[in-house]
Image (cartoon, rainbow, N blue to C red; front, side, top):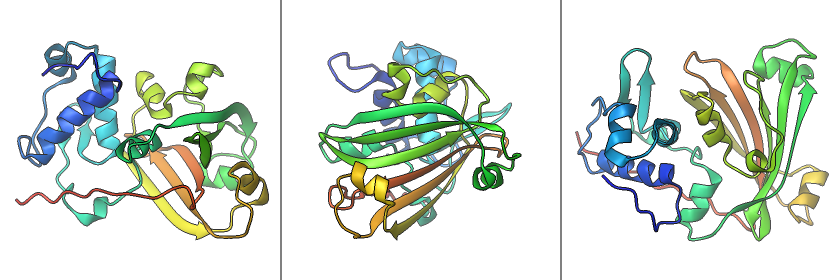
Length: 243
């Protein structure tokens, strides 16, 4: 297994695609224990951090699951329609549509949890949370995301982080997710978000709420995302593997 140096995709995405293909073509079957991070890093000639980021993507997409003290296995229920999800990253979605993507604006601040956020995270009102607000798109704004993260690690307020991959950074800090819940609805976006996304009427837009849990099933991240429906099309590719 080799990395294509000429490929513009980051190494971890190339590795993610290679491992994903092994699952989809049946080389790695449901319940199989995949090679260790050390073995994969030697096979690909990259660091274990890069391997970990690739595996975290596949865990998020429900292709793999981690078990403490055991290893990483192919998720048994991946072929089920219950795995239908918007969980893949915006960058990956745009890549699949043949479009470039970028973060157009981003802000990070430390806030105090109000009653609603305290209830969501099961913490006390006034406890600190990171709040990351981002506008993303392809030359024009397509989505606005409002993300809240428990301060279990220090998050840098730097250009590299603000305009980079949130999940890749968390994985690099050994913060991994084991389960996601998503709720999707059509709503009229708040006025200030309509202004950001250049929406000039009350047409309902796609809203997604995402709850991200760590390996101890503790909520670490909560995100509300609004998509400009006139500039965004949700696509899903679902693979069914016969047993």
